[in-house]
Length: 101
Image (tube, rainbow, N blue to C red):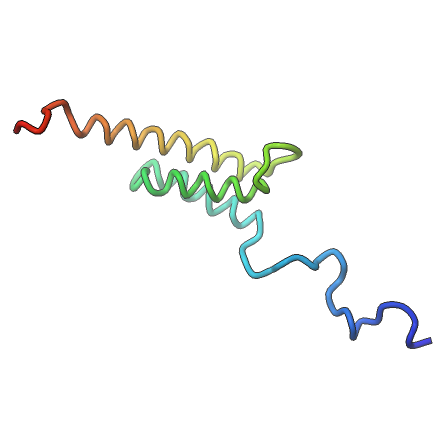
């Protein structure tokens, strides 16, 4: 009877957890994206905004279909606003001097 079925010694991982576990999971990516988006409003928006968008997109599973975790969706939206505001701020900071003083 010991040779029948899939024993725990041959297959130590259950069938539900056979994916790669080397990187952060989706919930962690959503929270990281949310933190980046909020911090981007105060400093380095041009860097933290796109980082928030990427983390939120990866946390959503790279798709808009199906149920989306709230922190991931908020991270994508705030990251986009953050990036847009940073680009507007940079465009306004350059001025219209045409390089003359």
